[in-house]
Image (cartoon, rainbow, N blue to C red; front, side):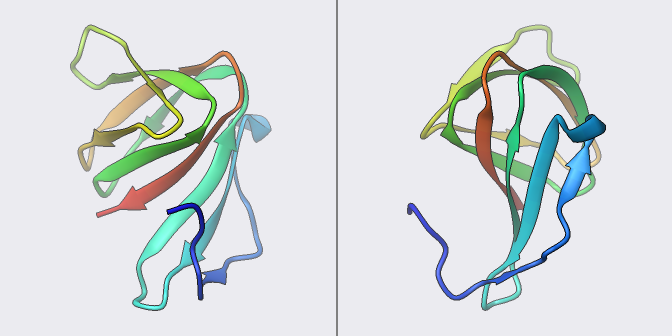
Amino acid sequence: MSQFDNVSVVKQANVYFDGKCVSHTVVLGDGTRKTVGVILPSSLTFNTGAPEIMEGVGGSCRVRLKGENEWTTSGDGQSFAVPGNSSFEIACDEPYHYVCHFG
């Protein structure tokens, strides 16, 4: 799907790592929350509360989940899952646009 219809958007941006990651929360009609954002070129570590699926919609990144030794590449049209109460490292050489699905 290329767009979300009939949603509410939280106007206040989620800004992380001095602006290297910026997203907005969207709330679907059924109450499901997602974030839509971009990570600028950088190497960052994110902690998770709920499980997440990161869906790439532009650019690419390298990802290493907590406890793994190898990096994997993820790009436009690809996704990766992160368990809840965990973390992941992400490295971007170009802007990486994503949708984060929670739960």
